[in-house]
Image (cartoon, rainbow, N blue to C red; front, side, top):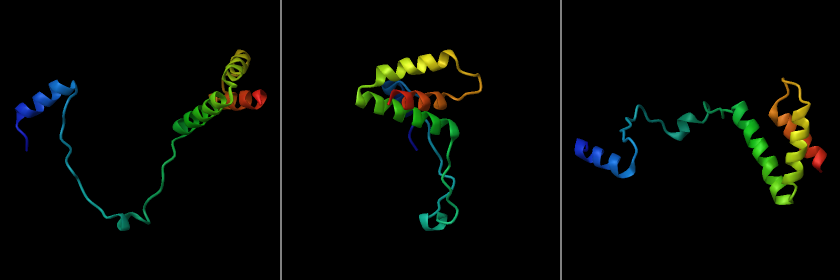
Length: 95
């Protein structure tokens, strides 16, 4: 264990709070093979897809056209339409 003074000094030096994590358990990877299921979060998935469309538009030099199309589509969008749908339609119309 570290002394309290060291925690306070590190906290002041880095400007953040310092904590200690306790290891609750340990399993080998071979024990986890059958139990592992990757988690997919819908919000993060949509944001990643939007970021991908924006990145491709920047690389292709079509970012300004994409943003204009997104603005035009947002003017007449229905409240239940997702943002990803607008980006996909704008990207399709831009190409």
